[in-house]
Amino acid sequence: MTLHSRFSAFAALVITASLGVAVLAATGQFRTTDLSHATLQELESKIVGSKDGTLWLAYGDKLMEHQHTDAAVKAYQKAISFQPDLIDARVNLGLALGAGKDPDAFFDYVSRLCVNYPKLADDLMKRPELTHLQSNPRWAQAAASARSQAMD
Image (tube, rainbow, N blue to C red):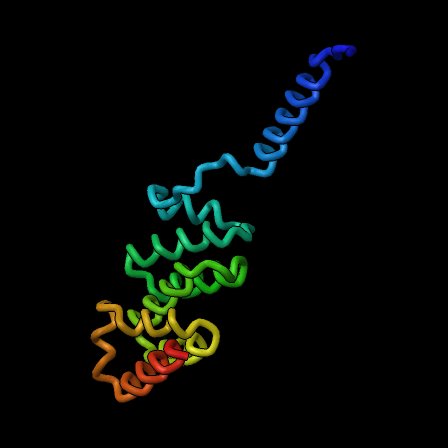
């Protein structure tokens, strides 16, 4: 039985692993994703031309911290347009619309949310941040619709 050198197999393994790490590093997979500590100004400079939904989500969160609900709504909408699977952006968009001055926009959003994400709409309607909207006559209908859609 002839024994073959294992050096070539080990070298191929090392080269393949090195190339894999290099590709991951080049595509930014090792970048930190914790944007919660960034300032509003830092996030504003980062979002210019960015199509990263998580960056727009962090920007919207920071705007909400500073009570800029109208700008936060636009940031969350951008986050959803760039990355539709961001559930946090959808929830935070609902909260920002609820905190805004236009209840029509909130109830329109909830009705659209009931179609595609009924459980999310039901959970959103149960949030304590939205209790001030419960006096609105449309609240009962929206909550009932969200609850019935979530059951299906």
